[in-house]
Image (tube, rainbow, N blue to C red; front, side, top):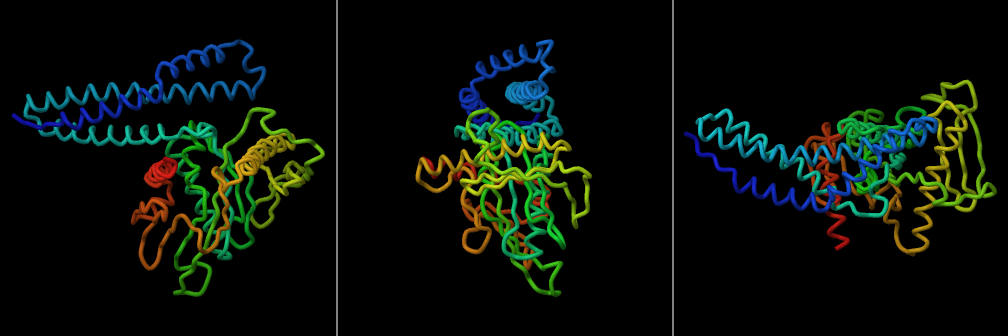
Length: 368
């Protein structure tokens, strides 16, 4: 007969789970799902496609949150039964299964616990990420594209919806800049800790053999504002230019002038969109992102303090928040939290949860 005792660990998990349930407010979440379900069941819902997509997306997200909560409750109950059966039957295989499940539940609860720290006004919103190459020439442009892929892979691993809104390709390799949206619950609150200057050190594939190259890229993260009227933008304050979308090397990928560039004249803020085939759709998307950026500028001016949402990012020496080192050793280290891993390949393939969780906790400590 076995005698594995996981009672203390399970009790700690239940205590953490109870705290999370109280913060999440399951009753309010259930009520919101019922309300959204009622809206989604309206016969003429899809007469307004934009509204329908918003309602169904919100419903799916909320149902996913509730399902995760309910799943943990069930898994904790099953874990206790599994431990009991393993001990009674003297089954080492079941005992090992219980240990693996304990670790898995700890991981899920850890992720949910981090989410409870996201209580900012715009934290629940979708995120719009803009990546710009900085100092470092061709290597910097290539690094910017690596970061873009990294975030898109992270979203893919979590089954989050993404939309690439605009890409400006560099001449030799990589990108000058790119803007894309990640639509998920608390996407902005989660990813806002990724804003800042990122630094890459490696043996350059573009320069002289045997020479290390340091390059930089800037990551900006803003919440996507959908509500009309949050920031009013008079038509007289903007200039709209239209042009043809293009791919790498200037190759035309569109035979009509559907891409849109909007310049906000009072602030000089520029937003480009070329994802949609329709000029009207690109204009609408660009205006939404412009609203989001102007909202941040407005809050900076009102608070008279350093950016809290997007941050001031110069993409050069002295202000990097994370280093990716590929030579002479392998390491990715966040300079704010000291969180580091020795597997850059996994990080560039979207394994970012550890960095994000450490960043959210670091920010919370600074706020307290």
